[in-house]
Length: 419
Ligand SMILES: [Ca+2]
Ligand SMILES: [Ca+2]
Ligand SMILES: [Ca+2]
Ligand SMILES: [Ca+2]
Image (cartoon, rainbow, N blue to C red; front, side, top):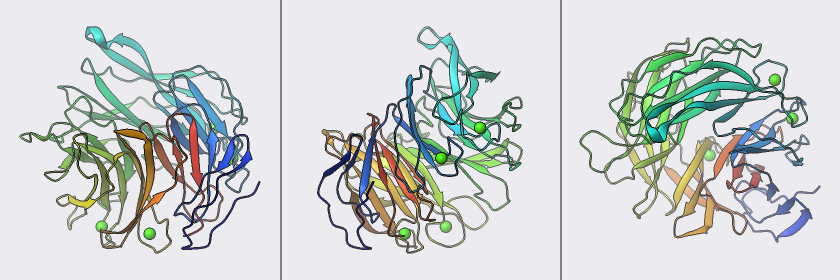
């Protein structure tokens, strides 16, 4: 199966041509290669070695269905028909039994009636990969303490929070009028977990019921060798009528707990949502920084907000960079143009016309600014409203690639030939 390759800097659009029933070349992009699209059920997008052959396969999941597409080692994918009826609403991938195959980890609501004021209760379930796109029966793990309020948000990720080589599950929950908190399930490596470690958030932010809807990252922000948790969300900032977007940094203790947290709001005039977060050293001063895409529901230009690390730890005041005039739904960082500076890729949609959904590469200048913003092509009708984007090295050449989901069964993969 061929892929049309453009040389570095060529930045031309190719003709649309059908390669196979589920694969089409969809035009130009600025990662130096033609994009390919795949039809996969489910809206969230995930990358991991599902079949254990050493490369990164694609999964989609959301609602009650999921999709699977194994990689042929070169970044070409072959979606296979899978049937699954399950609650995939809070799904991540992790190799919980350390057999080299990524397994499904789900946070499943099993009790409660939030519409009638009964707090919702969740438990962790795992389904081991069989290696062919199917998964074993769910194994039920310890329940999480019930949500404190009648409505809330939970975001889940997988990481090795205590650096013992075993995959852990990290989630952040918030509910209207209640303190937000991080909950960590430490993995044992044999498909079981320790009792969940719950840390109260002390940040003076993130109190809205919508908080933490946008994402989590873990990174060592203050250089103490322990992983910290970075939460992006939106909600009420005390005293701020604009209800700005915000992030919180929770200081990790290296054992799955968090000892303190600090909140940061987007600058005045920015939007009330923060999409991300992305973490890295964008201004190349040796300190970790945070970026979010500001999603504006009230019109006006979309922006990126950076918080740069400061001496002594913590982040400085948010700095806004001009964006692209659409509503962002997800972002990833990485050096996509190979100049050594961290860049940002976002997926976005235009609320007035969802068919104008798009993906953007914003090339970092190494000083915390954006030197160029270029559009990545998207298929006609692509809808980024429910979209997501992940960064992985799909073809194993050491350069970061991206895969986008439109939330409506279309996955687009860009193999990086620039960096
Ligand atoms: Ca694989
Ligand atoms: Ca496994
Ligand atoms: Ca920095
Ligand atoms: Ca770059």
